[in-house]
Length: 345
Ligand code: NAP
Ligand code: F7E
Image (cartoon, rainbow, N blue to C red):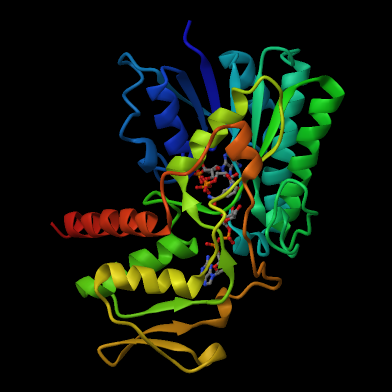
């Protein structure tokens, strides 16, 4: 019998890559999508067929802020594995909508775990929780499973709740529940307002002449960036172990936002020249100012430096990423140029 997976957050970046992986592994994949006024299935349209055709991919309407919808979907699908990737996942936005972020990103996790318990599915279901390096926040790098947490945003605080409630339900009710503590991972499917995709889109447009300028916030924060395709494989591997545990997933390398900009410029053949400091720092191309700083992109509390130590995952899961920062940038740039050229046609 085919294994059944249920993915909350199926319409997001990771949901799309994970669905693809699980379909390749011959799972029946069920995804939860929330109602939105415009279509939100672009990332999964490749494999989302008309439900009247024969398919292994199914969508259900539901919402992490609605306990009953969560319970009913789990009861109906009876999954072997649940991946909770659903969240209000933008750190900057979480300062604007802290209560909503906590409801979905923290309590949403409780709603799933408590449904598993109420439905007496503790022994049947394996649960994956999408944890984040943001929970380390201000803790000194490198960060591993043993590093103390120090969240610096409503998003990170909500994810920290999810981390501990996942461990609590594992210990209290013997649920096979695991936390993946994933560092930043990007791809051509990354949301357009996260810094890597924002940079790629803007610089491609500038090169093709359909935009003039890119505004950014803190150029000097450092991140450990990987490719989403590698990271969803780690999620699956975490649920295939004999015992539930928590794992850091990272590239173990760190670069600044400015370095990422420089890499994208290099890939596009844009010779960028930086002048000025602080809020007045600017990037020039052919003497034209194409990058400036806008204070509105600074956060009330910033996470300055994230760098993972993924030794445990590499040893116990036999996981290692195929991509590096250069192949990630190449993939994102090539895909964006293709998108922009085809949208022109
Ligand atoms: P994403 O692209 O923002 O996707 C988030 C998903 O959650 C989307 O499908 C979204 O639906 C859904 N969602 C939002 N609110 C919901 C609600 N109330 N009910 C049900 N679903 C809801 O995020 P991602 O980059 O794929 O990341 C996946 C997960 O990993 C998230 O939990 C994120 O916080 C976490 N994470 C991400 C990274 C990273 O670097 N990407 C690193 C560590 C952890 P819509 O499509 O309708 O918006
Ligand atoms: O910011 C700086 C910003 O929004 C990265 C989410 O997936 O990864 C993501 O969170 C850095 C920050 O990602 C702009 O201040 C500068 O220091 O791309 P980001 P994030 O905040 O690291 C973690 C692991 C998650 O779990 C989250 O869900 O870039 N930055 N200028 C900017 N950031 C944005 N968004 N926009 C700018 O213009």
